[in-house]
Image (cartoon, rainbow, N blue to C red; front, side):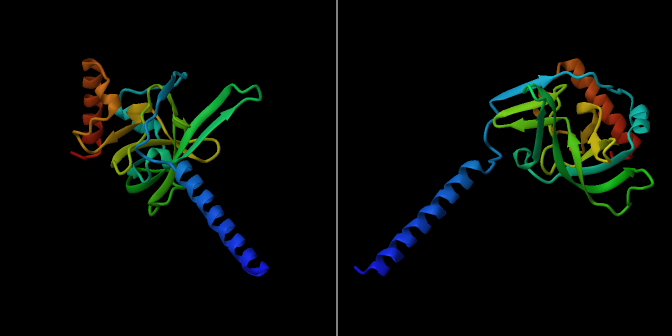
Amino acid sequence: MSLSKKKYVLISILFVLAVSVVTIAYVNGHSKPDEPIHQVVNLSPNSLTLHEIDKLDAFAKLIVIGYATENFRDREHVVTAFDDGIMQSFHTNTNIKIEKILKKPDDFSSNQNELTIIEPVSLAGDVKYTANDYVELQKGDNSVLFLLRNSYGKYGLINDNLGKFSLEENNQTNWQQSFTSQELSEYEAFRDSVMEKYNLN
């Protein structure tokens, strides 16, 4: 075999090897929606929770009906830490599709149908960090979302799990299943008041 043929064979082998390594790295690193989350770390920050729909409506600056467009693992997760390694903050940037605007500030376009919102939950490897037992929006689950704009101009979901209400009455997510009967009764009464206020029954 000539020297040029040996070089050609060697280059071909190296190319195939490089493509294989990249493919394996992509497959192993690519998020899989059904991968289990092995640990949930719940933090309890001091936050305001409103239990009356009129107060929540007045406090929120933007109220929409919309749904998350990506699986939780595929969203942008942000966890920041101080120089000493202690966690500073966490959140997830969630892309939503807006189906209907129920309330908006003057500078929010009536025609806007997409938005990235902040949720008080994040993921680092197989550990999920959450505030006040908040459970992330589920992909494709049309919900009423109560939002407030922060000092950076970004909209974030407010009122923890009482700031999002699925339009599907029988959509029992994991956090609802872990409610006591009294908590579930309070949640369902709050949800009913949301549906009634915005004529969504």
